[in-house]
Length: 184
Image (cartoon, rainbow, N blue to C red; front, side, top):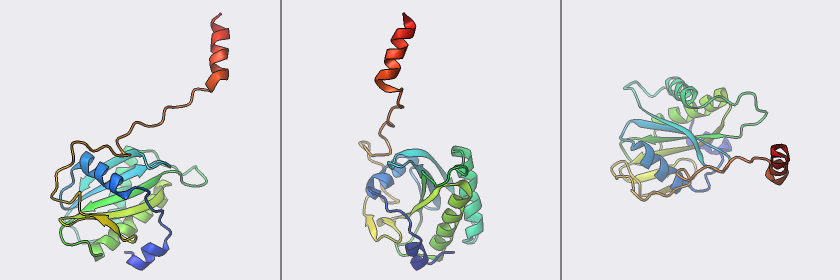
């Protein structure tokens, strides 16, 4: 389990647009209380992969949470263990009952996220709670009232998560000239 001070000292990268990330994950997964959504973002905070799952009724245990997160990450995206430094970031949105204040369960999820990221070769990102009163990025003090655990996703959710990825580069003008020459 991690305490809030330990999480804040860990150097977790800040989200540029936490509201867009939260809104996009909420619209995509429609979490209800006791649902975790783990998402992998690229270097521009575009969604690469995500998975949602219901928390089993076990005691708050960082090892169990880590194993669940790691299992879902392995299903949705290959590991980055061969890279010198991580380029993708995993974030966790946990929908729960109660208010936005830190709980021991949050500490267990934070520990599980950090460890799962290390074991999968990802950078550890934000831990976000979603409650009746709204969402909160723990350790950053940023949050909002919408979406909440009781709100319906917006039909007009135009977020960074929903935008098309940048097209792959094809080699530019030189490659096109070579193709034209080869076609002759």
